[in-house]
Length: 113
Image (cartoon, rainbow, N blue to C red; front, side, top):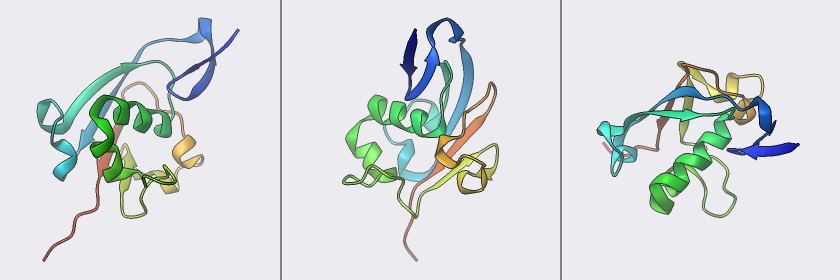
């Protein structure tokens, strides 16, 4: 039986828990526990699926800092890294599956002088 878990289709019996570390920076840390560094237990999930889950947990204001409110695509100025590699350089981009122990780092647009 097919199910969806955090935006990723999987067979129900294949769900297994894993830990993903999420680090956010600058104003994305606001409203998050542990100064923006959390560990999430999840089943199979893609980068996009994790961003959707984080948006649900931390709300629209948080989500709009990294996602365009109209298209729901990642803002071009936002940097998303997995284990230090920009998601644009990963084979499946935002569709890349996260693995046990991965670190997802999210840097929002920062302006100033």
